[in-house]
Length: 244
Image 1 (cartoon, rainbow, N blue to C red):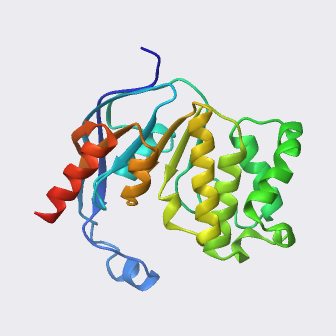
Image 2: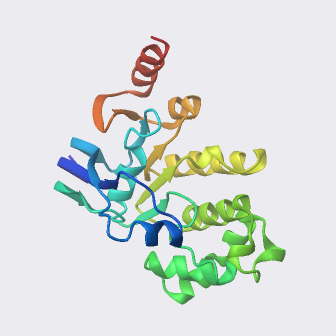
């Protein structure tokens, strides 16, 4: 089989502090007191093969490990143990802020993200107007990104990820942000990517969109894959379990 992503016995563990010290005063008062940490197992024994052209949905409750899995595929996190093989270029739309520099202008961030994704200056020049049209932020492109609203940043981030031609697209809750027009554009992008036979991994709580677009769905519960199958079956199983 033509697998673009293969994950074998993957495990991800984080060391989480038991107490939070945010202020200078708290750190001074407790300078000699060691911060105790505990292990949090975000993903456990993940085995998953994703074929070329597959539109995979990942569903589950908040904290089930969905976003962590996408970040490992995007090479933002490293697995604690296990193996992952990604054969192809990746365009990630994961969460607000990844790959952005708030002190740069929106235009500069388009070029920064393009370079991170392996494009040349000429290739970014050719894509720039397409990014601009999708984001709808023409008059704000010379503004520093830190002065953008969160909605504007999301529109720009997805416009960059969606207009760059790549092999694998990673989308984390893209349908939960932006206005109605932005969401319609996002759905149109998904339809287009599916027609082109691109590999897409979509994390979403929008179960209707999961059923509409995804050829296969993975259900994550507390870091463990508990069900894999066609969209209708897995979504219905998840709804039934949630109601119980």
